Structures are given as structure tokens and as C-alpha cells.
Image (cartoon, rainbow, N blue to C red; front, side):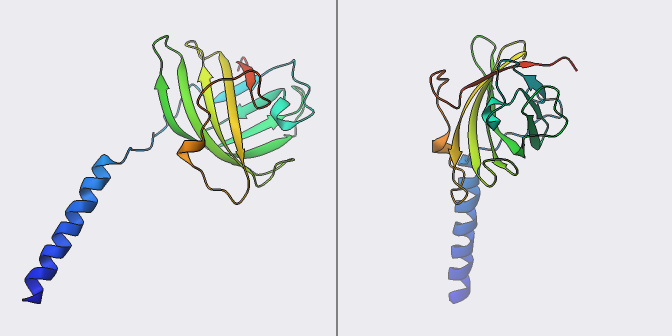
Length: 161
């Protein structure tokens, strides 16, 4: 008598888990040639703080930011992953990305970033939130709009490679 009950219980549990998996949103799987990857610059930035770095190099799983265009040693390095990607009605490319800062002033902190690339993928505009080292990533913490008035707003241009 316990055998059939156990089998039914296991079957219902497995069915529930598989249904929930179907409802869960799948994480975006980045392509090897994402528009986001490459070297991004802004000569007008001072390089005083890492978010004002003049040059940032973004790869599939990491980034490096350099205070000045001519620097050979990064001011800040960290990990980065794309959480989601979409294209708006105007053809601009949007990303939600997150990562951990491994070196520099904010070593150990995490961030969540909203990034907009122009349709031609030559201009990067972003804003981000900083999470303390103990905080976990939270989809509800992503910025929801570009706001040039906040300190974490950035504009960069794709460098010729």
C-alpha cells in the first residue's frame, strides 16, 4: 500500500518540477560575437574614478577599464555576464548585464547594468546600480531607464579595432 502512494507522490512531484521549469524564463545565451563585446571609449572622461574610465574592453566573461586611453594597466577589472538582450522598435539593442568588480576602488562589489547600444552598435549608453559585497544579484534591482542625471550614467563610443 505504501509503494503505490510513494510512486504517485514521486510522479506528482516530478511533474510539478517539470511544469515549473517550463514556466521559468530561460537565461539568455550570448553569442560569440555579441554587439556588446569590444573596446568602448570616451575621451572626455577624466579617469579619476573607475566609472569615468576613458577606455573599457568588454569580452564574453570579463571587462577591463583603463583610466586613460593610453594606459596599459587597467584601473579596474571584473567579471561580467549578459542576463538578457532585446531590440526595441527603433532597432537599438538593449542588455541587462551583471558582474563582480575584482580590482580597483570597488573591489568585491557587484553591479547590475542596463545598457543601450544604438542600432549601428557604435554608441553605448548605460546606467548601473552598485550592490554591496554581501548582496546577491536581484532581477528587480536592474535600472529601468537611462537617466543622464545620475552619477552612474555613461556614454561611450566603439573604438576602431
